[in-house]
Amino acid sequence: SAAGHAAAAWPSAKRRRVLALRRLLDHATALVARAVPSARPLLTRVRHAVDAGNVGYDAFCDGTWVFVNIAAYFPKLPAAPLPAAPSAGAAAGAAAGAGGLTGGELEADELRGFPRGLVHDLVVTVTHELAHLLVSGGGHGPNWRDAHMGLLQQVYADAMQQQPGGYGARRACAACRGGAGS
Image (cartoon, rainbow, N blue to C red):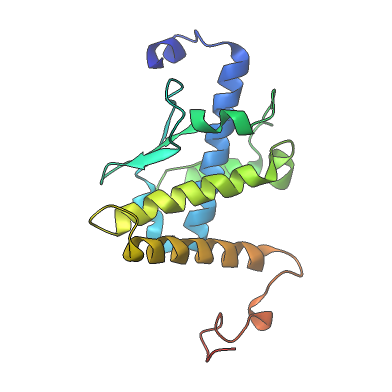
């Protein structure tokens, strides 16, 4: 419960898991903020939540706030992750932050030991819920799907451009560069 967590009643291993998942969620949110700067004001509405009694949902959007149930991600986390202390880059990100939201992106060494797919899952969850904030009317209709896919495309295009020797603008297809079809 929240009261148990506040009173440090949870076992230390569970508290470390919550901390690790919060840091990964912050990382995923920072990736979205870097790729889609115009989304930063909305990303300040993303909150961590721990609903350990109901892990049947990853997150929900109430129209104003997004609550990510990090307890739903416990099974995807290794048994005993020990997150490294925040790097200088993460500390600087915390100061600058996406609207004061996160500790920023984690450094590569801070991501070691976590399943690679977990960051992807969290980016998908954040963009999924962000699309609900962007498209009124609720549901998962065509407008919502277009918004969600557009956000994901921006995040992954940005991630690829950050990679050394990766998918740079000069190697992008004509459609990705905004030109005629390829």
